[in-house]
Length: 82
Length: 153
Image 1 (cartoon, each protein chain N blue to C red):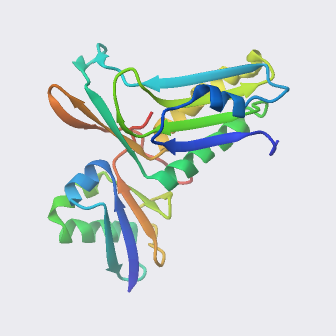
Image 2 (image 1 turned 90 degrees about the vertical axis):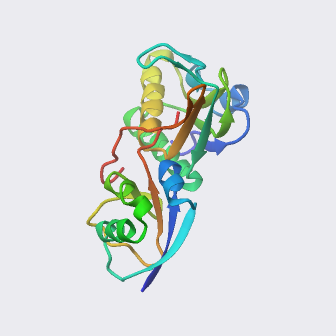
């Protein structure tokens, strides 16, 4: 298994109800696989997983990417700073 | 070029323009283009509404890394730029309060320094992970951006 740390921000955090979550995931799970798992295990996040932006170790990441060991994964909506 | 100053940060403190400007002004500098955005209390364009305050949050370490990336992109496009400052304030911010500042300096004003600052604020709003929640008479609402970053961004 691969222990990863999820960080939720903005609307995603509101829906998750927590800021962070440590999770054991199968080795070689992709971002798409992780989103599917979260949608299944956390029904509150199901809707969010359709449009969420994902980062791996503070870089934007996409569905096909395999989650590396002990990754820090950010999940959030499109940014609105300024 | 590596000796040119680049300042970037997420802060909960008041944005100090004079201090930032001093940090990015060299003896060869003759021009600075500064953009700052502030909380708008009354919005008239589009969906007209009033704002009591905005509450900003950031994914701080990533936001600062992406600000550095924005500065690198500016230098790639406008190699004449001397100093760059990019600051985003977070927390609870009330109307008329500056929330963001981007300043670029150069030897002269006709060097692309205005375009560089414009690029900086546009890019910040695309890729720097900061979000704001708007609190007004009608309730609380997250402001959602639109930009979907592409691989390599």
